[in-house]
Image (cartoon, rainbow, N blue to C red):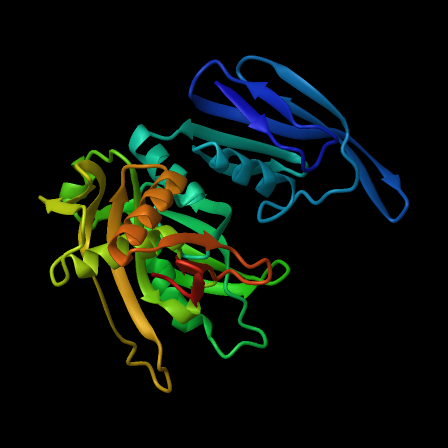
Length: 335
């Protein structure tokens, strides 16, 4: 098994190899020396296949919670390798590792890529893992100077991660993070499956889910909004060239997306909040740009106009422009 360590402590990324998918890796520093106000270290990494002698890695911390030891743990978790670290003696560690099963590999990949939701979260790192839970961190809403608090956005974050993993998720803390964001920490309970049917569901396209207040989202999702607009109209207002069968929406006989969860909206009941709460899940069978193009063709057909979308450079919103003859009008927001 190859373990690819990224560029953090050394000048270049490098790879170590093991014979098996589980075992023990030894990390130690046989030599250290004073340099300036601190110490510099040489590091030796020993696997069941080979010994790697790393040159001077400079002045680093050997702490397990954020230094060299922590670096190895988080790097291996990034590759879906479960690892625990034991300090044998000063500057001498042993890491017991095991490649995670495919089911857990799928969950971790979903947590890193967040392919199905428009939550505004950005993956930071996996902090730890066990047989029952994963602890994972994301960059999210910055509380400082904002009238929106962490406990207001956290439930939406929990829901988004639950949708991605089909597991129960709990928000456990927030701290100041990168520029323009804070870091939110979550526990994902691996054995607490929300819907057994979803575990067996075959996904043909890409799932889009929103469950939260539109005003709290910097990017509510144009593609989701287009599917949403059709889903809420299809039971009340006939849309030309659109058919729905077994929750699958077709344009001109071509299957475009499936309604996984009925879309709806309601007033947000939070104190002093006039925002609207949007909810719905869809599975899109087409690529986003192809779907948006077909949607605008459908829009023009139903409203008897030529329609296209332009994106202002200074805003995450978008504009729908309509042209009828020599007259052009524009609307801001989602369709």
